[in-house]
Image (tube, rainbow, N blue to C red; front, side):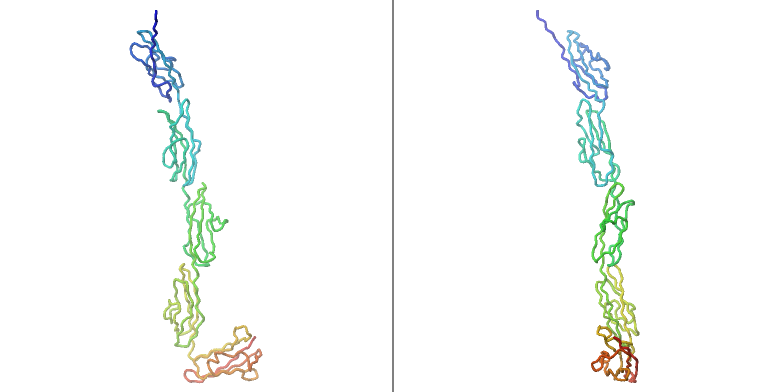
Length: 420
């Protein structure tokens, strides 16, 4: 006798291991049809353990066995499926919410895991400012100030979980240096750090210069570069720069005082350079008040002032006197000191506008110790000697005679002290 045992080939879809993710999963056993009966074990928590396609609603992992019986032949078959209950995906971010300065970056580190399966679909969003959107680690470099929320997502089939972190970008402090572009040499320069309030400062002028305003006198003319860094309470740093040009003082010398007779003119012997503009005042008697060396023809003795301005707008002043004497004019000093020091060595009488002049100097015994009868000799003067010998300290008397422009005789006299 030969006995043949037939079994029913049974299979379950959607597969032996499936993602549950907290959702109901419909199972499908085959074959199907009216000639078959079904028995699922365990029967709970299935919607109906006697049909081919019950719904599994367990929140825990369960291995289901289905027995399919051919009602005609009474042959049976079995299959098993594991419904892995992946109720949650664990998503976390290790990096805490952080504040960074503009231009800085921060590494964001997260982790994604789940039971029974490996989560490989891990992404960051939004993509702007991120070094990569794939994987649990990325670098955030947001470009605008404010809060930037980055979301880490883990996915498996239709399941997903998220975590987020906030990166707050602190804008760079507003900082600039308020100062003049140009100053004059030997003038004080004030530099002020301006902009946002509450910053701490560090100047490049001196390690100890941490105040908001620094002052100094630049040592020489030229262009100087200044920097200040400002740091806010978040440690964000910005730097401001300023170049200041120090303009050299003009070379200004109005020259020696001048003396002329009535109706005469003289060029003022000024030496002026390195200037932007100049003006002589008063204008009266000058041929051009804007020349370096104007010709002066004043009607009376006048003090002229030259106002010189450099490129930085700084003004410098010097003066020269033009003395106007009558056509016949005589002036003598009260003392002289022929001691060899090069100062006030000669006794000279200033005689202008005289004809036939004569100058005599007498000692206290009435002896003539000096005589001159030309204006040139009178201007050269007496050196305090007589017949090659130095005369003693004391008072000497002088007389002068000459004819003025009207041919009238003029006689003057006075005394002079000889000191050594």
